[in-house]
Length: 50
Image 1: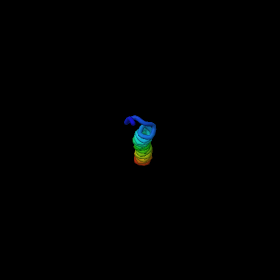
Image 2 (image 1 turned 180 degrees about the horizontal axis):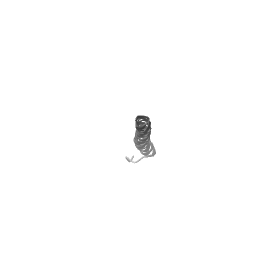
Image 3 (image 1 turned 90 degrees about the horizontal axis):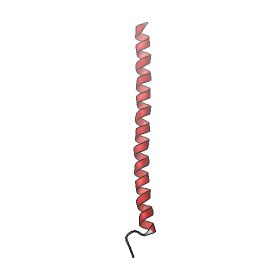
Image 4 (image 1 turned 180 degrees about the vertical axis):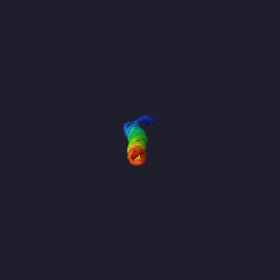
């Protein structure tokens, strides 16, 4: 029985995809947070100009 059987390959791929999804979600969350910060900054800036 070899190391590269179907079950091990599937387990590895699932683990890999889970890690990739986690990274992708973190990136999306960072972008969203940055958008919020920029929006707040712009609101503050326009209100202080008046």
